[in-house]
Picture 1 (cartoon, rainbow, N blue to C red):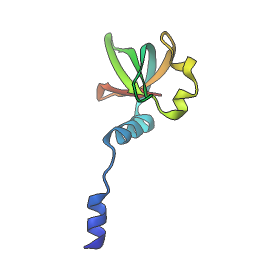
Picture 2 (picture 1 turned 90 degrees about the vertical axis):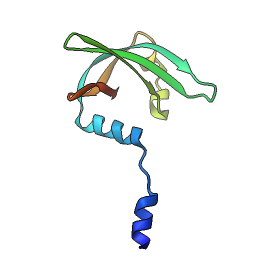
Picture 3 (picture 1 turned 135 degrees about the horizontal axis):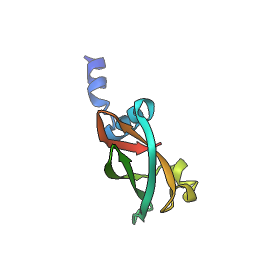
Length: 95
């Protein structure tokens, strides 16, 4: 019973799991940063766009500490790599 209780208490972060799967298995395409926003708590969100099969997709992502160290890479107008799920092309993350 102790082991079962431990497993039930361990919760996974669905966003981290999704990002991990996309980074491991997603296809890559080119994207462009269109805007950034700094939240009151200091977090930075980037908004980006990418095109697949003639369809424009727009998404956003909270930058992690490593990404925050290179602000020019995520400045508006910068070209970035985008990993996406080929079965659900709107599901993406920055590569």
